Image 1: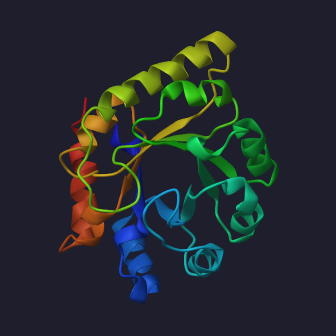
Image 2: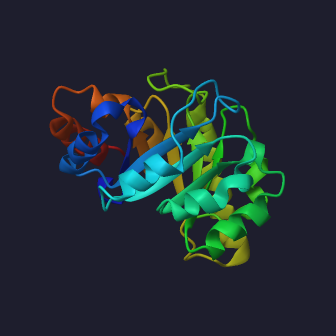
Length: 230
């Protein structure tokens, strides 16, 4: 089962003073993707990075880069993030009143589309854009800071999202449609099997990797543990 699960290394808790080295560390772990959190200090109570830093990251890695926009009115800045080298652009449904228009714009630019939901945001907010998204991100913490504790009730939300996607495929006949379910927040050796068992296919892991004594061994242990899931 673990062969189908992607590990997305979140650089939020990396050492930004040595970011290029931190990314090389991620590459050595065998992680499948980079998860890049963009925060504006308004939508969430923190400020991180913008397109110039993402462009620098792009120049230093070939890893698939999922850029998570935790910012107000992300549609204003889509061109900047598209041009920065992001492979996937992840917008929050709470800040996109015209979500289908935003997703179509990203898709037409040749990027993968993703939508993120805060813990308290209902799944109904993405039900009508399943034909446009490549990935849906369920936040398993309240966004804004790394190192937070996992919100256990999100397991049920992941299960319901999986069923929603299955129902969509059945009712539309689009059985070949691939929609990844990503989780972000408090993912570690204990919580990863729970979310994968519920239906998650992409695990955003930050603190657990960067604070591990041996990140390579940690990711290996995580994959081994997921092999035993279900």
